[in-house]
Each structure stands twice: as structure tokens, then as C-alpha cells.
Length: 179
Image (cartoon, rainbow, N blue to C red):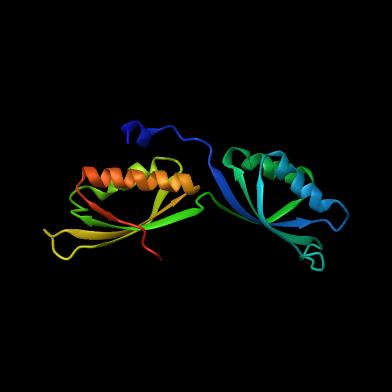
């Protein structure tokens, strides 16, 4: 894998967003909420419309999970506001795919932070958890590492980066580890 791959300029990331919208109780409001999402290229993963419930403000709650390019995220929020749709809660998570691996070797001596930084700098993946076991100061250590990415192909690319770096640092990669 080329060194350029590690420093490639960031590109737009598809974010997964879970939101609770509050809709006025009048016809056409669900369409008013979904039209901007469609216009901006969003993709609905799930939607629950609670027609028989009301929020404290007398509106109808709608839970929606969708994907949208990060560069359209702010435009969507603005468009919903213009359509009279309130966002009661929003949880943004651009990292939707996950892999768990074990590294074995002289992990600390080969600069684990450098390895993590190469993955984090991609803009589409990051190391979200690492746990290191070091039996003796001079002995090989092992690390359980979790990488999360914006999609399956991005996760595969991040794992390839990890494998390439592991080869350079004489580390063994065992994958996948089931959580």
C-alpha cells in the first residue's frame, strides 16, 4: 500500500444520525420532515412515527435514523427548521462499521501512537479502543484494538493500513475478534 494512502486528503463522510423530531399535528408534516432529507441525498434506515403520542409541547414525536453526507448535515438541520420541524434530540455517529483485532509483538517499542495516528488521519476511520497487556518490560506485548469506520470498504481500507504498518513494525495481526 502506498504511503500516499495514509495522508490522503479527507473526503466527505457519510454520517449515521439518530434523531427525535417533533412534528406539528397537521397533515403533511411527516412529508415536510422527509423532503429535505431526500433532497439532500439522505438515506432512511428506520423511522417510527408515534401518531397517538404527544410531547410536552403538544407535538408528535418521530424517531428517525438516517445516513447523510456530513457536508449536507447543517443544511438539513436548517431546512427542517424552515419547515417548522423541531429537533428534540440528535445523536450523530459517522462511524458505523467496527472491527476488533489483536496485535502481538513489541507494540510499545514500535510506537503504538504512530500506528493509531495513521488510522485516525484517514478521515474515515479511527481507533476507538485499545487495551494492552505487557507481561514483562522486555517481552512482547499484545493489544486488543477496535477500529470503527464510516462504511464496510472504509473499514477494510483501515484494516489494510493496520496490516501494512504491522508488517513494517514486525507485528502480528489476528483478526477478526468477535466482541
